[in-house]
Image 1: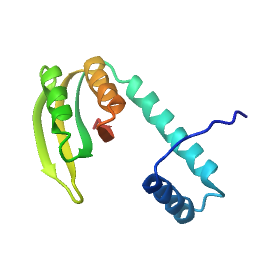
Image 2 (image 1 turned 135 degrees about the vertical axis):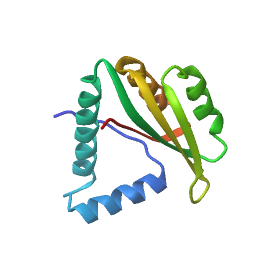
Image 3 (image 1 turned 45 degrees about the vertical axis):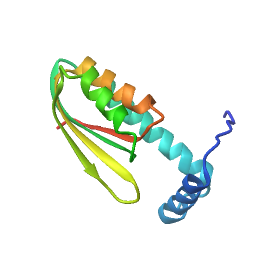
Length: 127
């Protein structure tokens, strides 16, 4: 087994501790391992997508980081049918993209969103 170090802010650490306790993990490492397993599983499912698909991409970001979502929309306007913006609580915003197009192009959009420091959460939903 390998040992890695991870730096996280205090708010994330508090949330991780709460998840650890509420889900009954034996410690933070076990909770982090479960999160990594979930990310790996989700990535494998996304990588299997092929052909023309319909999907929804949900993003959450800080208020004021709208430019990142708008850049995504314009960069991937060939697959974006609709974009809906909503203000959430505590200075957070949600973007909902309804997508239709080649799976590879939609995967690329998801990866771009996930790799952005301005996007806190990105979830692709394929019915």
